[in-house]
Length: 434
Figure 1: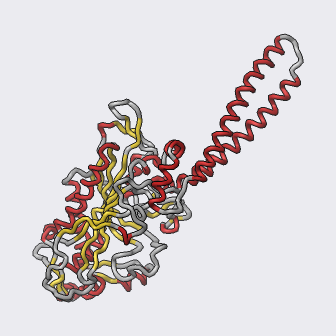
Figure 2 (figure 1 turned 30 degrees about the vertical axis):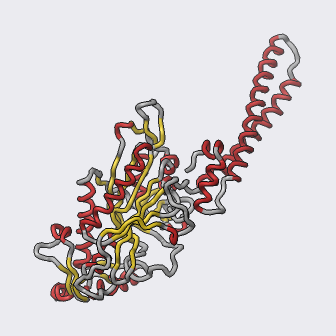
Figure 3 (figure 1 turned 90 degrees about the vertical axis):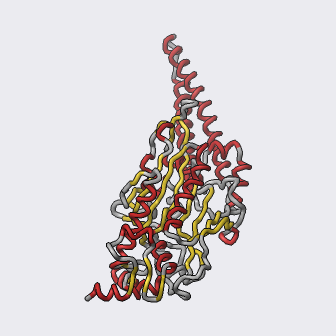
């Protein structure tokens, strides 16, 4: 949520920043409502002062034995007018609040200009995406997975609907290995592991920016007014909502594994095959709560923490900085990690690492008391995927494919796998079914 004081005092600056996202965005209506509300407030305060004076006059007149009927009638008129002003003021405040909640965050000056993803900036690559793998022409993960008997898309659709899948046998073990490997790596670098609820209330979803704008993308339990989480960012960031932390408590690093649920309402026809865009998927999330002066450096460290997973798994990837027109609703700056998918010959997003400045903290009421001033201030929040498990599994199936019937397990995951098992094969799956 944007600071109304910032909107009020620097409207041109705020408008210019919003137009970097989309030319049609504007705070003009919010400013108009704010002026109206403040005018009503001034009139209300003046009438209250006048009523107080008249109340004193009534008391003095009664003490002197004078008739007060006329002046009491005037105070009743004032009271009715004040009541009307209060009602109008509340209506304007509600309209203004709804408009403010619907405004995205302001992109930081460092965020590059651009209208959409075509203008995102590739910063660097890691690993040789064109390096020859043992399998010269690997199958896509959605073909080799079923061949190995570890991905079952048809039965996922049968028991649910499209964009649900079943991971089986060694595929399930590989997914579990990835989750444990990611959590162990992040906790070794200072993150506290958290296992939050997978259902959250409307307030939590609003706090991190999923609501009200993106409700169509969410799965909602109507009877309980709870939402299946689209990412662990929601429950983990909200753990400290409404609290006043001490500066000594910061920074707070948290990591969480959760399943995630998204309708993908606006993605019809996109990545309909495989694990890339599912309604249910697993993810390990990284969340940070930091002092404002530390947020830029912490953002770079968060990015490095997500990159570390890809490097340890030896998966080629690139770092892309999103332009102002493509960053998420709550983000002020964002880097995407895109893993190389050799069978498809493309890079696919596997993590987004974002800094939100105080945007989310204002929505959830999360502050800390600064030691230098003794005054409360909003924290800065950050998060990133560390990583999306299904997409990592898909990348392994394509990058570690020896043949159309055999995939090597990355060295970093062997300690998490069964003794002696170093690869996934059609033969091993056949023996398992005997």
